[in-house]
Amino acid sequence: MTPKYMASVGLTYNEGPFFMNASLHFTAKQYSSFMNDQAMPYYFTNTIALGYHFPKVWIAQSPTFRLNFSNVTGQNKLGSVYSFANNARPTVGVYGHAIAASSAPTYAPLPSFAMIGTVSTSF
Image (tube, rainbow, N blue to C red; front, side):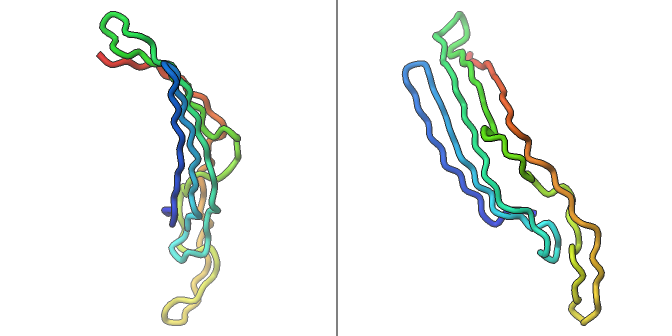
């Protein structure tokens, strides 16, 4: 149920108190049966974060406001395997016996576009 390959590339930009992070993630196909006859296809996701570092205020050393945008393109994809199956198609076992297909695996969807705001500081 784990992908064969995963890759990510990111970019960070700072200009004074403003900052931005952007990243692109790739996840290869994931098998969802023990016989590797059913798989979830590969997919890409992307994230962007925009923020501002405020000056020191009283005991707050570095107050920061940040907006995180995930799955910016809003693709409707499968995100992970929810439950696996023994085999999705009928197959022949080691000793030549026919093995009937079990139930199909189920998947959890990848959340569509999301925006999350955070406020943080250090003391």
